[in-house]
Image (cartoon, rainbow, N blue to C red; front, side, top):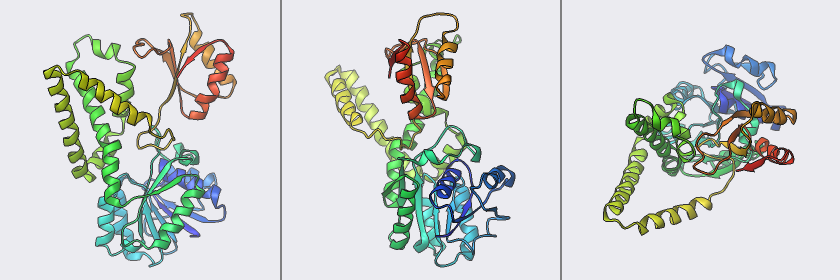
Length: 362
């Protein structure tokens, strides 16, 4: 594992490449992208040793090939490189759906050297310019060896994942796709449809849109995700998504029946059961849904108060993602909300705000 080839070098691929360069400074890393100019900065900053002229130009030399383009392109690239692969080259990917690409590897006769991968991390921004090895730290990196994958490849790549400071977890490809459908794919569809429902039911003055905040924004934040990416995911994981959607719809029907019957104690039980399960979830950064680090601050209604708080945090070197007034405080939030890119920035801001007599609400 001395020569690595990345086919695609966006946010995730770029972050892995940067982490790889830090963990193993002496390895040789090349990459190919449809638009070579977009990854030239990776050579300039020392992450890449070279840019490949085509998807196949560096295949024979590579010990490890990482497919880091969108799901459909990964499958296309896998078909392109398969005839040129050395029998000892490991091929992996970073897509959030494993079934289609695993099937393709089997059809091409390279299942023994294919190991599916899925780093459960991300950001709102994309491209190599947004790449950062830190987004891999303490995140679950799912590996999906099939029954045909050579065990030594799984062992070697698992060790590499640890060197990237991520947390390796093993699953079979089918189990992975069912789990990600449940915790990511279906929630994204639900959030998008919920927003559409409110949009369709709103009046001409957009009364609902104006007062929406708190819980509504929390559970629909992911509706702002990349449309093209989600079309691809739904195309690749249709069966699992439909199965889980059916279970969710059945659950909504049971709630509707409970309301019709007036058995409101069942609503209480629903929230008790769901709350207990959710409160027991691990609070690691790793997630199929990017985290949103936000706190609220009680501030007086004074001219310049937003600038004062922003300046205070900027003086401490804390990067703010967003800041503004909270007009709906149904969840007992403070008057001012502050969003951060990193959990560490949010944690650093809390004592600074408190030292200046601001009341902070998480």
